[in-house]
Image (cartoon, rainbow, N blue to C red; front, side):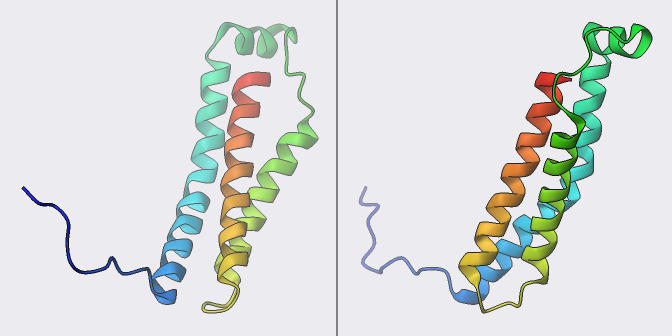
Amino acid sequence: MNTTTEQPVAALTPRQKDRLISGWAIAGLALLLPTVVLSWAVVLSGERGTQCLMYGQGCSTIPGSALYAAFWLALAAGVAALAWPRGRGTYSRAWAVWLQWGAQLTLGAMILSGA
């Protein structure tokens, strides 16, 4: 069976790119708080988290300022990607979304590994 086509594959139009970027930014903002809450729930349900809560032993070695910085960076980058005018600066908006997701995933990893 021949699966090749004679028609070229069409690239995304600028409007489709803008919608895709906005969709990823909205998804990241919608998942930011659940990421933090679920990460802390996993950590606090473990032995190390319980000991930290009850006895103050074995608590996180990651400074709280790093966690706050990653949270606010993810939030600011997502809002910036959504507030940026459509049609202009598509690459800047895409980088803002990459930064948003990078900061968000880093935040979750820091909570899970260091807390």
